[in-house]
Amino acid sequence: MKNTLIILIILFLALCSCSGDKSCPDITTSNISADTVSIITEKNDTIAMVFDYEIDQKCSDCCAINFTTYGMKKCAFQAIEEWEAEMNKYYSLLLDILETKTKDKLIKAQGSWQEFSLMELQLNRELYGKMDGADWVQIGIGQTMDKVKNRALELKAYYIAITEEN
Image (tube, rainbow, N blue to C red; front, side, top):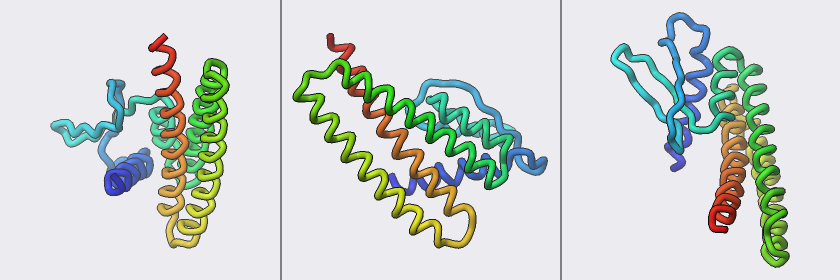
């Protein structure tokens, strides 16, 4: 899992850094249904990264035109904000439909997740912030985005499970 994450981050960074460089292969995207990033190699060795989630696709498209370190960070932070909004949306929806006992557990779980997330972010900054090279910062930002995205998707899954059952 950790190796897959690192490979995906490196591919993501390669996508972002190749954009605008005429020596890099053309990068194209299209929509398919998948739970993860799909890497497609066509016969002309063009690489396509296809994302199931619109936020991820927007981030990739943003990086394709903002291929500086600053530009990629800005795109990633925008994606983090959008995943946070998605997380908060499903958290609120769950609070509206859960019974009191379950709602209390969700509130405690979300509080614990936020505390964990904050501590993990501080650790991330301590570790990667001291390392040489801008790539480490990008990897740290990618890890942060993945944490928020995963939590948003967990809350969404809870919501769908409850609402489809009724």
